[in-house]
Image 1 (tube, rainbow, N blue to C red):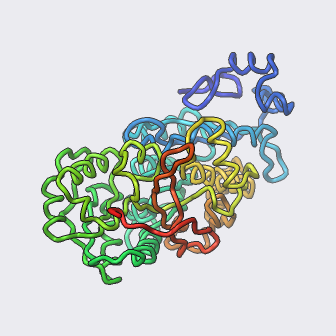
Image 2 (tube, rainbow, N blue to C red; image 1 turned 180 degrees about the vertical axis):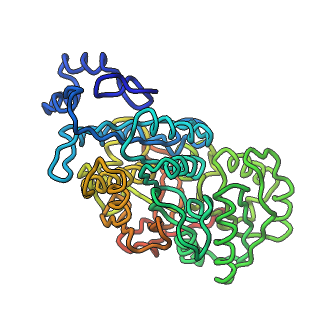
Image 3 (tube, rainbow, N blue to C red; image 1 turned 90 degrees about the horizontal axis):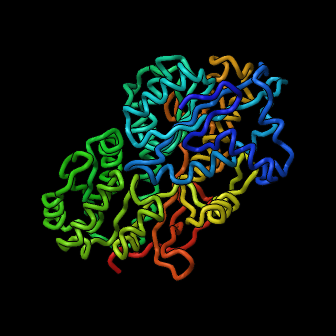
Length: 442
């Protein structure tokens, strides 16, 4: 959706219309009005110093769990920008333009091109899975627009877009900070010994950017650590019958299960696995990409209890948002109060993207010069809600790894039916452990 001819966007996925805003202002409603910051938001279109930032994520569609909390975070960030952003001695008005990919890679690419060519953005931010981030980054690379992304295994972002091991980076404009296979391996190898198993791991890695990267790098790491990986081969997104894979896992007596599918596919698989008796023999069910959010786990009912996963952010992380000044706990509590929904880890992941993105704009020699902004990202070293983001450390050009910790979904008797508990902090000792790992079929 294009912007209005004024200096704020029309009603969009995450925004409110000018008319609605004016009504609220007149009634004295909202934090912005109460804080007396309306003039900063509504400066005249003649202002020369305006920064446009695009933000792309999946708010609807099969990947909607990743973007569920994004509107809330976008609102917090917009409020923090009400007085503008200072860079190079100038105060810039910031127009944050948020778009929903609807979980469609083709739409993600088109949205990115619209933001680049139509809205003339100065910086692109994108998050959550290669289906969103990779096509957006490709569009930015082709157009010479600085781009920063997160919540994608860096192998899927870097190698999945054509980079070759040991070769110079083919990317000049596109950067990512996120976990990688090593972080998953560290979490799994540290956490799994808490449960005695036969060390046979049945894996379900899809035939997509995530799955192929995980198969190429994680499976060998698990084998090296003494686990025997049983891989029936890649499967296509949207598969509805997993009988052959389940039969193989039962035959091989795989007491550990590991998968990286889109959420609907896991729900289908796990229900079939329960119907066919496999879940009764599973001691550790380790899931990723799916199983990150309470809404997904609740939909599984009792089948969701004791599923293990990894966390790139938890409300107990001891880090604050650089952009908003809010602690991790404050972000989670604020979300629950504002929406009535349970906190979820993409809240911190998305906030970290804004922390890093706006830190780059602030440190750029010229925030309106795209090459200067890209250079600022390449040398970024800041602490965000997910921890330290330091692009001077690799693991490859254009990418920096961030930690994940081990966790498990447990049944609760409080306001919410299920909770995500940190069980292992091998990758970040600053994160407090909340409980021990329990066997899935205990």
